[in-house]
Every structure is written in C-alpha cells, then in structure tokens.
Length: 239
Image (cartoon, rainbow, N blue to C red; front, side, top):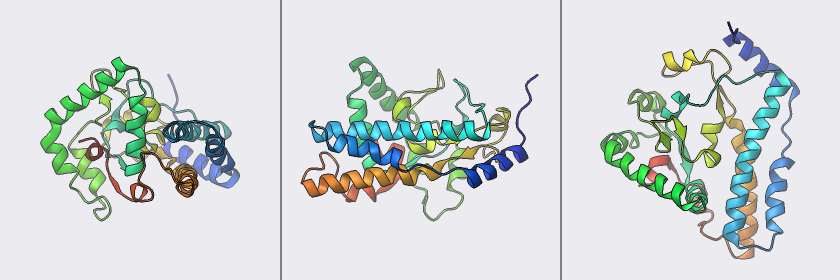
C-alpha cells in the first residue's frame, strides 16, 4: 500500500524549497531573446515564445520537485482541478487562440465543436459565474467551484485537456503531492501546492518581448499594452 506525504510533510518541504531554491530568471529571458533574433514573422515569434515559456514553467516545477523529493500524485484522468475558475489576460487569450490555429485541422475542428457544445450546455451557468467579481469577491473561487462547471477545454468523457500543451499558468502550477482523494473529497482542498509565483517570471519575459516588438513597430496580433492589463475568465475570451 502506497504511503503518501502528509500535509505537514508538504509544508516542511515547501519551506525547505523556499530556503534553498533560487529561480533562474535567465531561463525565461533566453527564450524571448532567441526569438527576437529570428528572421521569422512576428506571429511565429509570439506563439513560439509563449509555448516555450509555458514549458519552462513546467520544467522549473519538475526541477523544484526533484530538489525537495516531492512526486506529484496527479495522474492522467484526474481532473478535479479542472473545475476551478481560470483567469487570464487578453494577451494570453489571443496567444492561446493563435496557437490553436496551428493545431492539425482535425484537432482544431474537434476543439471548435467542443467549445460550441460547451456554451450550448453551460451557457447560462457560465454567464452567472463569470459575472463574479474576481478582484473584489474573496470567495469567488469557492462559489465557482460549487457550481461544478468543467473547464471549457476539458473533455469530460476522457477527463483530458484538449489544449494541454498550451494550458494556462494556473492549470500547470496547481499540484497535489498527497493522497489524490483529498481532491475528490474536498471542493477546496488545502493540500495541493500552487507554484503560481512562477507567473511573474513568465509574464515578465513576455512583457519584455512585447516592449521590444512595440519599439520595433510590430506587435503582430497583440494590442500592446492594452491586452496585458485586461483580465477575465477563460470562457469570456472564447465566447
């Protein structure tokens, strides 16, 4: 029978991580510096930087886990965290959409059909929940979670994300290291760890890249800086 880390174990290892681990910001900035020098269209630079920066976030979490010997208990088909509200800015929404345009046609068509069916099925509830003020209502996550609304990118038949490689930061930084039943038994479990602090490095690199492109006179399909400062629920960007 497998023995899982306790909540106290996880707290102690997170404290240890905080004491001994330093994020290498250069990992993030090297990505955008590389693409800034490429002789390719701005659209390609933006999508490639976005995708690679998301992967750096995931790689950084993997590295931190090894440092303090924590192994995720999240497994394929486990999707309890896919019922939380996801907030992203306009720039991230546009980057997601543009990245999905590059998916194979059959996959893209399945996603488009899925999204149409999603709004047909959950439209009224989504309208209600995405009207919650996420900046002022401290209980908005719990209220949203109580509705048991799946993420618009979740295939509820397979419990798999339909846009996994470009899933937003909140999706890839929320990790469980103890018994998976804590997610099954609790709407808002205290045990999972959030690595969402990595958002600052990820967004800092993207912001610097957009500043560079802005000075060059071409930010492609991004309206900079406006798109960076408009935040909303994920479904609202895809209506």
